[in-house]
Image 1 (cartoon, rainbow, N blue to C red):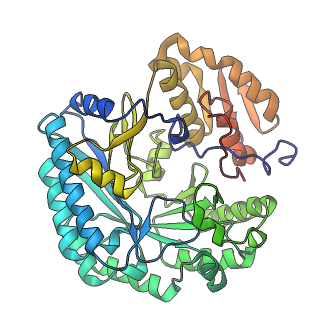
Image 2 (cartoon, rainbow, N blue to C red; image 1 turned 180 degrees about the vertical axis):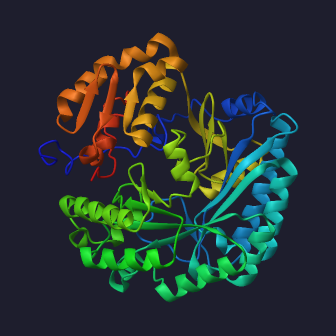
Length: 446
């Protein structure tokens, strides 16, 4: 029946934001960015995302804005640009701003040597004072880490490490251009724990070339032996029209949509059997983890990094391609590193495209987030924030209930996605989406 509903053919957004970045426009750029920065409340902490776009190796499966380098020269120049961007933010923001969360992603943040780790961290802390419950996470490539880098990150306040694994099978790794043995990964985890890092995230990907059920199960078993606190299990998004390097992956080697669905279901069952709890559509966490607590308390949120227990209303994105989320909308920095650094060198804020939210957008964004996080949408609860406008979504709920019976349940003004229908969540959320650009192609729903 899932096939009849179109699950195995559908291509829909992942909804880490609403509207999605595909709806951003050049009409909302640096001027909006400057105005929104100036309107921030110093009493409300912000989150910070720092994009480090450089990699010594370019993984074929990756669709992020990254570039390869064999030397540190472009990395050092980029850190200079980040420092200059922070000074531009200092001039635009009210004094006394604090940060509750910080995440370094990429690319490969661990391409930075200890001196640059320290330099970047000091520049960030000179602008933003950490809160008492500050959390700092970094994406770590086990093939580009050593005890000196880990010590530098810990000195910078690292509280959570996020380790990319994808799949441990050698043939799969060869096909995606990412060779990383279990032994290297285990050594990285041991070094992190020896340095006092107690919180560990791991990223796995299903739907990769040459992946089979047995290979995925072996990867899951090895991952669980590392005792992670959180696991993100992402479906591979094959979008070679967006990420040209994905053309190096032969489509004939990719599992089909039905196999992808079974991979995801089997993995979810394996993580549940290990004692982890399912978080949203693609995360898992131990009962003690903050994500699980947020889920149980209906405080789970969704942002550009996926599921989070971060309640900061503003997420400031730094670096090329980073997206800032303001209460009033989104702004993305120039995606290409050269264009980003050129704007910074000219003394301009780097925002080049974005989206200004209207009241209807905020309502839709929260409704989609409820579906993605809680698998439920209660219009009475929405009305507490949005007033009577929340009930404008009632016809949408009826349409969803009609189309997706028996996988959803509509009780008055509350819609619940039943456990057996949660693979349909992105499709269901897409029926609320009023901002899908014509001709836009997204990743597989399965």
